[in-house]
Each structure stands twice: as C-alpha cells, then as structure tokens.
Length: 177
Length: 316
Image (cartoon, rainbow over all chains, first blue to last red; front, side, top):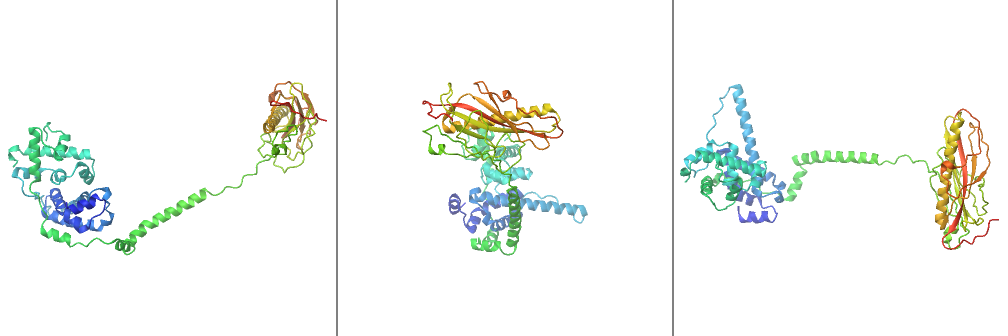
C-alpha cells in the first residue's frame, strides 16, 4: 500500500480512486489467485472488482474499515457470483447432456512454491486456500479477514489453525525451501 | 499444525511477527515464509484495464446522477415508500391524538368561608373565598344549575353565614361567632354537608333505612371535611363536635316524600363515626320503584385558636 493511500485512510478521508487502485491492485489479484486457483480468472475478477468499486465509490466509508478489506470484500462477492454461475451452467449442461461437464482443472497457483507445497495447496479446500491467502500471504489480521469472510475472528483463527495443520501433514519440513 | 506445541494464540503472535521460541514454531515460521513465496504482481494488461476505468465522479455529478435515469428510479423506489410510511404514521398519530368529546363539567360546590373572629387573618381570608371541587356525596344527584337553597339549619345560630349559592348537592362550611364553650375557649365552626343514595328497590323499608344511613354518613364526612378545610384556612383548631343537625329532603316524586324537619342532637365530645350518626327523622312508607334518599347534615364544632383566646363576640 502506498504511503499516500495509507495517510489518506489514516486521516479518515477517501483517497482518489486511481491512487487506491494502484495501491491495492496486487493484493486483490493475489487474493483472487488463491481463491480461484486460476490466473486468468483472477485477472478478470480483479478488473471486475475495481469496476464495481468505482461504481460504489461513494458508498465507501473510511470509518468502517481499511480500503483493502472493502476491496477484498467486493472481490470475494464477485468470485462467489462467478462460482455460482459456473455451477448453474455445469448443472444445466449435465442435465441436457449437450456438453459433458468439464473435469475440474488443477489450480494455477502462484509460482515460487516448492512442488510438495504446491501439491498440498491444490488439495486444500478452496475456503482453506482462501483463508491462507488472506492471513498468511496478504498478512491481514484476524478481524479484517473475518469481516471479509463474514465469520467471527475466533472462527477465522481456528480455521487457519486447521488449514495449516493439514498442509503440515502433507509437507515435511525438509521440503520447505 | 496439528502438533500441540503451537497454540492458536501463538499462531496469531507468529503471524503478527513474533519471534519463534520453540523448534515447532521455527518450523511454522519457515512454512509460512514458503507459503508467502515471491510476491506476485498484477500483469501489465490488468493494470491497463483498471487504469482505463473512469475517474471518480465529483459530488455534483453523483447528485446529478441520483435524479437521472436509473438514479431517478432508485430515488423514487426509496423515497416513495418512505413518504408513504411517514404519511400513514402521521395519519395514525393524528387520529390517536384527536380530542375526545368534552367530558361533562364537574359538579361544582361553592364553599364559602367567613372568618369574623380572627383578627390576624390575612385580608383574603377574611373575605368570602370560593373553591370548586367534586362532591363525593352526590352519587344520585343530577347535574343542576346552581340555585339558591334554604338557609342551613344548624344547632347553633350562625349570623355570619353567607348566602349559599350551591345546588342541592352542595355543602357549606361557615365559621361564625358562637358562644364560647367551657372547654373550647374559641369560636365554633358550623359545617353543612349533604348526601344522597339511590335505592333501586324502594319497596323494602330496610333498604331505604340502609340507604338513608349511608347518605347520612356521606353527609357527615362531607361536612367534617369542609369544616376541617375551613378551619385550616382560618388557622383555628377544631374541637370535638358539639351538635349535629340532620335534615332529610328532596325525595323524587316516585318516592314518598319523607317527613322533613331539622333534628338537633348533641353528641359526645369525641368525633362521631359515620355509623354512629343519629338516625334520620324520616320514616317513609314502602313504595315500589327506585327512591332517592338524601340528607343534609350540619355539624357544629367548637374551635380553639392557637395561643390566644379568640375575642369573638357572642352570637346573638
């Protein structure tokens, strides 16, 4: 986050949209990659997120939380809408038999991970992967992440504890670079 | 992380940047560092797409947008139900606060007090004072316009009486000069009250007697209360009642007219309870239908002034 955006949010004022988009674009994109496991889809959803944010720019209140959590909330809703549409489409295709439903593709997670870690992340549930993306990758605190996920901070911490435990089961310490 | 070495609290602390303290925590920190990996930046194509978005509309543009096109529809969708609700609430509240029909004017009683034996009383207390109140002893008396009533009949003559302007249900309390009683050393207070009772079945003489006793009790209480108020206003202290005069009157046409006439009965120095009031001198024959039994009572109290003996002239 740029210092300009941080200063504006700290003062309780709303930064300029282009400035805020430039400051939070990478974070939103990384979050959507972890959530969707698809880089192309993450790009589309990121652009959609900022378009929606621009429309709703007047409704953002700095007193309700940081700009990043507001943007991540929009991104999450856009991703969930996308998944619902995709599920309805697959159900409809399967019902009429016109098109065989596609098998789920392996997630396209960001690089820089070891092969065992990537494999372990791919086997995680999407919601656990999303939580790890928010808490570990983006470094959000429990309260902010819980607000985005619409859960309590305690639930957020417990879920992260379990998700990291599942990862540790499949990844030995020697595989960690 | 299923290892019990790292608790949830320590996990939060490590995420916040705390230094690992145990080998398990060191492994966890390395694990999270691996997960963070290399920071992934958005591709340039995405930056261009986001950068091409329209700039933030100014407040004036937003205000203009609220009244055009879809904004106008939203405004109407929000404002119309709100206005309807406000209008309905206003109507409901207005109906709820609508004034009810005016209640009948309270029955008034004129209480006239004349203090002639107290030289230190304030000027307004030496004049006739009038108060309006509800009379508790007139449950059967209809609302009537004030009409002159015959002068009260009391056991002690009261030359200081003012004209009674109350109706049949009214009462009057008068402080008048009276012969000094051996045990009072002051003035006397004569108070008059009245009571009335409706007897639904007038055929039973016992019912009429009971109603008459109740009317007398009401009248006694009324007279005692008036005398006490008048005495308080005049600053004198009432002694035990000296005499009670009872007069039954004002029977409706369907009730045989009772024999009227004052009856004066000296009573004991202690204040008499209503039940011990002397029986009325009326003895109406039994008749069918309802009957109103009314009674007027005059009670005379000797008064004692505080400190000095009242220098009131004896009653003529």
